[in-house]
Length: 120
Image (cartoon, rainbow, N blue to C red; front, side, top):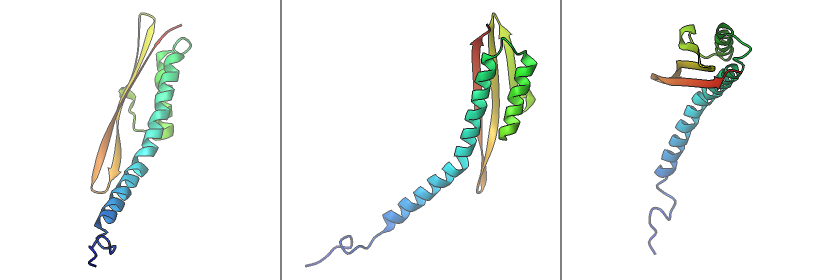
């Protein structure tokens, strides 16, 4: 009775390739997840500040968002935060790029958050 290579347990190249792909996915997640958590934290602050527009002026909202970005370590420049009020509605617009370093290259992850709320 002849056994094929598969039946004898040889030919584990598929397993090696699968492990390499898994290692790459874990490395990308290791680099991206902390940045996503920081960005979600900043997005929540932007939403909260837009909701409190009735009690805060534009400069206070701008400064609170900038302080939160610095606190979580995101590269948001003051000119990338735009706060505007029109017809009893506030719009907070924040747009920035987050550089994420990988071996051999840097990925620029573009973020754009807009929060609109009525002013009470």
